[in-house]
Amino acid sequence: MLARGLISLVTAAALSLAGCSAPTQEISLAPIATPSATVDPTVKAVLKPYYGQTVGWKNCGKRIMCTSVKVPTNWDAPAAGSISLAVAYRAADIAKPLGSIIFNPGGPGASGYDWILNSVDYLGTANLRSKFNIVGFDPRGVGHSEPTVKCFNAKDTDAFLYGDDGFPLGSPQSIKSSRAILKKFATACAQNTGPAIAHIDTVSAAKDIDVIRAVMGSPKLDFLGFSYGSFLGETYASLFPKKIAHMVIDGVIDPTVTDAQQSVLQIKGFDLALRNYLADCLSSSDCPFTGTVPQALSKIRTLLRKLETSPLPTKDGRPLNAWVANTGLIMPLYSQDYWPQLSQAFTEAFDGDGSTFMSLADTYNDRDASGKYTSNLMEANIAISCLDSRQPSDAASMAKQNSRMLAASPTLGRYWQFGALTCETWPYPVAKHKSDYSAKGSAPILVVGTTGDPATPYGQAVSVATKVLSSGHLVTYNGEGHTAYGRSNECVSSAVDNYFIKGTVPAVDPGC
Image 1 (cartoon, one colour):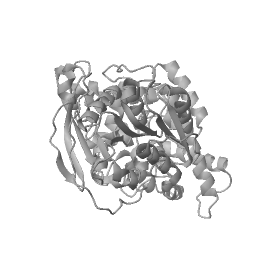
Image 2 (tube, helix red, strand yellow):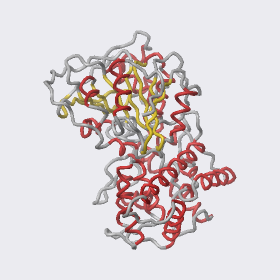
Image 3 (tube, rainbow, N blue to C red):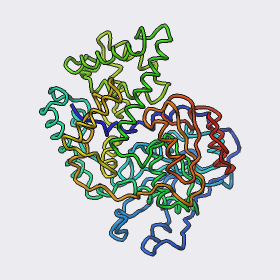
Image 4 (cartoon, rainbow, N blue to C red):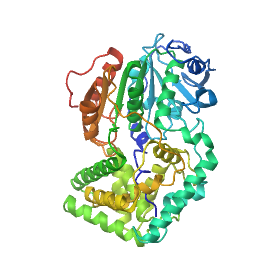
């Protein structure tokens, strides 16, 4: 039984981007011209070999080129060694692209490199992809980049994510057990990844983006960041405000909010999404609930409490306990497209079968039917997050935070308690970061927020656009799901495309 509040933080961002875009336009395609690096004369001498490096591009698919880019292992000591980042881009359809948009799909821990190779036609719009090179990369610690965070083997990961220590929630025995396995996890990450794991924080990743920008031959950055990618973009903007050409952040994290506050905001977001799902479900004839939304929530709480001591059987033989069911419940709240699967999961569970909830949890955790984990998203998520910030883990602080979580969501908050334990024994200090995220002097930054977003609640987009950034411009999508561009409506797509392609910013929030 693990305290997984931090592990849940925006890890499924990439899920919400899939399958929501029109196919690429069928037009006459221009030959691909690989970029040449451009070096700003103000770059320090010790960094010029990175900014001016020549990379070997190779063909990796239809109009897709890929390579590896060297960056300093430790940006505070750039001459002390380097690591390689996996970078790929889908070439624009036109002979003279308008630029190269570097994008991040979220996480932390989601692979932008794999997105380019496997899913680029589902990113944004065909109009944008035809005019810009679309660049994806694996941040340090992620996927194909160095150092790839490796922690447990598949068997131990199963125990970590799906196990139950058998002790009552919140009991001294349960907290002791959680501390023990989290310390074992942190030790395994350090041993199996190597010393470079100490340098995979978001500030370092943002500095890496500036090298990739230069390698792509762009004097200024074009950037599109979803979910955690918004934080990565905000961090870049705080470091290099005058190097921004265009920046769009969608599914926005407020960088001025503490970890503890972020957890409360997020659990409120998921609670709202659950209520919205139930309201929609109760309006249909095949809903597994009856009555009112409060009555349906009560039924869910009863189910989860029962699962704490009496797990449900599943078709693959793994028992569904309350904590796995919570993960399976959270996953389909990221997108309204998954709501029918959530209804199926509840229907089965009320009949004594936990199979669909287990399948949804597997999707969230990137676990395939053979028991293999197909990415290192979870490990990288924890490793990066623990370097970026931490919650206080003393008993008094955790008790106050637990009370906030329970008040924010009586249904889900019970299973998001003790999140501070996740990073308590992480063996590396929190990385230094900027205290000012206003990005004064930057070009306009487009901030896209969804009113029903569970993982990055809408209020954060409003705050970032109107209070945090000195040049933020809000685009609201009135709807459900996590992130909006490429998966919502023409209003959002036009606002983002017109900004990148024409340089126009909405005079007022279009309220899409």
